[in-house]
Length: 63
Image (cartoon, rainbow, N blue to C red; front, side, top):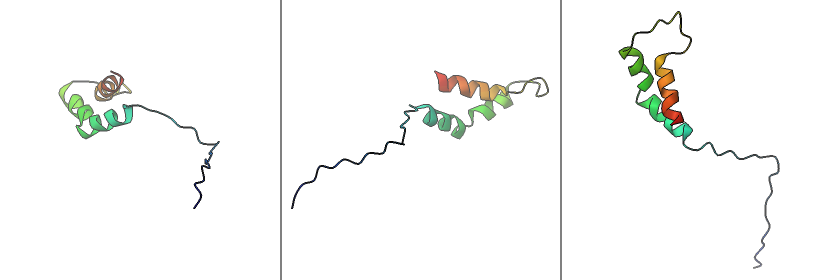
């Protein structure tokens, strides 16, 4: 039996390395950090398009 060293090329696939961002985002959502923050602070939903909880989740992911 011959050993064939053929490589398979896929020229149209681009790999992306997102790092830990998806994992940290899911951990924040699982822990309900955004919901907890929104319950703990007072904020006017009419004056703010983004909730404080989402802002805190974003900061956690970026750190």
